[in-house]
Length: 634
Image 1 (tube, rainbow, N blue to C red):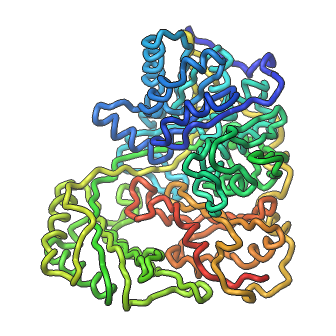
Image 2 (cartoon, rainbow, N blue to C red):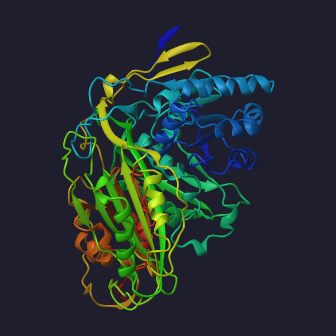
């Protein structure tokens, strides 16, 4: 039986708040978290986010090997908590369905039957766009994909989740939805929001963004981690969501970790790009967010304004990029650069460098005192060998980095007299044999005819396949989400808001430079002050967005924000982080959070799944910046 969903009926309209708990921020997160959240205190909805961009490639590889295309750890957690959730009326919403939400839902139903439980398990489909009608265009570069896609999934919003809950689902399993949809969908169901409720929807997106990465909202990976109590037993976050879209971020009492305006700010800046945060249900204005420490481990979020969503949906395409192999050599003592040169000459004498489609060499100094510095990558090969813009010739680019000294303003440490460094060599090629032991064995063969102190961290091995993430888009009207629950198939057609055009409804500064105009001017000399690491006054959080790196920086003392905004320009960022080279960089100001957000385009090449970088997701980029010494005014 097939039906068409209307808007979520106003029967929802329950008194708030709805307490939405997170029990996982990635495929591989703490297995005990679901039970901890269910048993630790009252919640209404249990959610988990399994689908990073990298995960879709992993699941595609699993499916090619005949394994399930969904997150199997979800079943382990459901075995622990499903009975309790049913007894207490706790709904479960998870994107653990990955590439096979129907198969995952079937497995949950079988689990419930084995446990003697009666559970209504719904699943959401429609995100899978395979086979594609034509080659997808890269949303970032404009290139057309020539390779054969493995997967293509549109990012759905929260409305199909709301429809599933309204039809009585106890468990909702989705495929590719936005991370925030796991909170927005339950909010729609609970409060009866329709597409014109832009501000409440935007507020729910912000709350969803905060809790989607689990403990990153409660002190995990926090710049000022020494202030976080009992981080080893960090509690997972809860969003208490209200009808107007405001929320309180908290955690269960008695758990480790910290919920503060600082930990919430850090997560708000994580991988957002522009403050105008686009989504399938609403465009949330992150430059309108207001934070308030309401009490211990309670941060209230208010003021979020919403605009209509775009008329397109983001699409995650993956394809097989080829095969790669990495060998890591350790260089110790004097003459590091010369040792690196000798090591490479010996390797390429046995297996020609030009025989590989791509070669990436990364020298990362660890420093004489054990401290780490910025890597110095050298990349040879076409940047996109499977695109319509491929050139058959080998291109070569080099960026010079180095460690940062503690005694100067961002001075690059090019000392070559002592220390330890990692020489990481990665080869990539369509032929698994060429990139396999032919390469890794050649490295080992140099072991007694190379630099003094030679040893490697990796044994010789075969090449492994790697996937490539390819961001694209599709007309939202061309995608039809479908909810299957209790034997009923419910279609959820695109329902855009009826309000004004994008940009006319939002509060806060309009696009462009207006946010910069809202920053109080800095009257001092940005080059004056006591030289100290930037991290003594500023926090940072960084991560990946496809092939781009996102770097958020904030100051905890609002009085320092005019200085930060004046000092940390795009040119200054290039000076302090030489690894970004001359790549395009966007800077966005968020005065409401005393923050700046930078997007470094192309730093990660073709994204984490294909990146040969040691820090393939730019997770440590923010900490490298915080370690640089700069003049800080008193």
